[in-house]
Length: 96
Length: 365
Image (cartoon, rainbow over all chains, first blue to last red; front, side, top):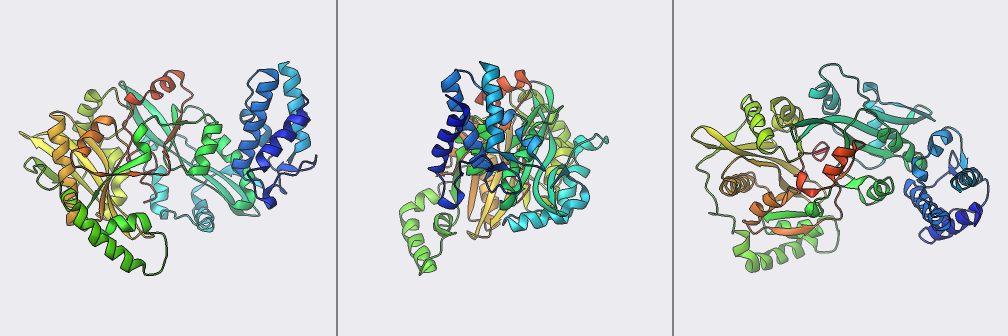
């Protein structure tokens, strides 16, 4: 399973809990963190936890996205779904 | 956006942030004293008051951080207390940056937060921050002093037609049904050895030495004169706290601390028993101290007496008064320790006796 599919599945799962105006739009430039992001911290946490669970199912190993430095490097800049995909690719490949 | 540490000058901006998010903030002196009078920092030890996120000179996010000293098995542990994690809605995605900054601190034995809500508690769990493993932290034991307070307790925040009439009517019904239980606490204790204590003086230093030895297997906030004064001074000044000592042959056998809290929304005046320590004849001493607190709460015209947290033993003493049990929305006490040995100990409920004296549970009252 590619990381893009993992992200897609997780977004679908999270969107089920969100109101229409708050839903995550699956497109590369969608900002998870950054000036245009209106995601609530709990939504971000839930998205990351869902991705972690799916990665565990696929590669059988635990990763902790919340302990990574995504938040720090995105501060004052932006962190998009495309960035997340790139980071996951690095991680999944690294773990494999 | 700028991420930086909190300074003394930030008070007004942080207060505005709290106000925008419908939260109350303590006055400047109380806020500043969390650090300036903190016994752990009197030796000019460096400490970060917290972090803020600033956008165009407006503080849009804040997380506060102050130390408290704890003891377990004769060892001293520095605890970082999380206080006031607030972020404006528009910037909520950045709130994770604040919490990560907070947990990234070094030289802390454990982190403790006692005021998490439904949402923030979920975030804590995702960050592997653990719930304080005391089963009954999600409920309160309550002694009802006025029957109308039950209805206010459950319906206080709701508005509906004929509210006052309905509250009044059901209060009468409840009084008829529960009269014996409401009055059960009376005459179940003796105040013969109980002395009211209006100041926190040197006897608390001697007492703390004894407590540290007797209760060494329990994680305890340092309850000596300087720490108790730091924690309770704002309440002492307003006469919103009372302390009872149990004395036998001039020797202190136990003590309790109770504070007054007014819930303006529910219009309920509560007496919170925040500390109960006994050194011998545990059952009798605890019973007499709790009874004296209920009596004092009644004298102060409180609606209810609340007892939250504590270990099984202390709760069993409170249960001697046949209190009502109120289920709370959640256990709002969470901790994290990077010290593996301490973390292992803290995962066992037998080392805990948590109450409102811990963390920031009474800071915002």
